[in-house]
Image 1 (cartoon, rainbow, N blue to C red):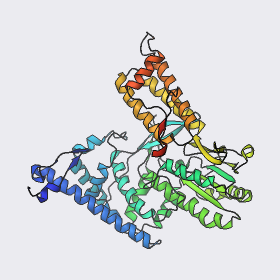
Image 2 (image 1 turned 45 degrees about the vertical axis):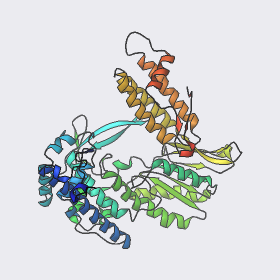
Image 3 (image 1 turned 60 degrees about the horizontal axis):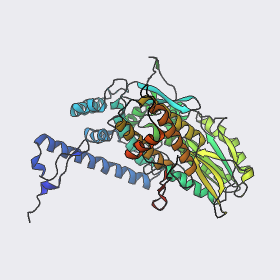
Image 4 (image 1 turned 120 degrees about the vertical axis):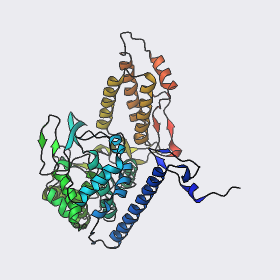
Length: 478
């Protein structure tokens, strides 16, 4: 047997493909070998530094971290660059991932040089609007690629520090976080029957109303590094370029869509809401209560009505202290007592409608179904998509449809949600029939032919995907 040489252990990945698959590192050109070693060393250095930070944060809840700005070096930024989405929309400078990658080393060197000499400036954030439902639009901020790159590095540092501080009630945008699994756990907790009242709360325009001063004061509780905090301040104060060419200079808020925005949102609500609920609301409640927050959406369950009413009365003042406001239209107190379906209501959270329902054996269970507003919005978006793409090659169109539906069934395919899945499937098929028949002047697509097309291209039908034991599809869902 031929003895494997030490160099044979190295496999270099570039753009997701293996460049070297068995001939040893000596088979690589010298520049490739140097780059591979630099990438590996940078990864090891960053991970080692982050582990050290996490260990100290865990040991000392009051520790303030200095000199984290030094982690923004070429090796660490190179690793963060590889983690960016290649197909992400460009910012105001129109620089794409591929553009930046062509001169990656020179670009990273220039960026680090500007950071060292405090000459880095945050660029304008390009604002776009996407449908939100109810005829409203949600603003999204798209930073330039270089700002995304820096934000990712900063977000990694903030995450390892605050992961040791965040409470179990906070579930969104955290390592290992899963929205569907969170929804299942919440349904199981309510299904115990202890909680009879639910506060369904909504913060009005959270990302547009984050107070910059409060945000920086919160970060300073754990970070004692002025250059690092100055970076965050620059992103908070960065101008926003509207679609009509106007440039806005925000005095509050953080762009929803920025790489660092999710962890900043969690930090803000950790201090503004989570700790207050844990230390004040729970202590004052006469009965049991529990909260679940996913990013800026949260619900609170109470055992006693008076505790829920008191919480609803105190909540606006608490949020108002930090520049936030409850949405009067969407915030409500919902009766949710087991065995009392006539006096109960349902509430929507994480895309699902939660309500009590009897099983076939007569047992009461908290059931999840696709929230009606979310189902309607998904159907509308699909109709717009098929209308805009109906002239595509059929094979390409069906391939994209297959991926879209697989993702939809993967999230909403929970036990007991079959009717909602089948309803969405019928709307999808009806939309396909309508718009594929308008690909030309001749109306030649029959229902039978459409069914054959869907089967030939293996377009997935509605299916339950929540557990391996319960995975099945609804044959003939139309």
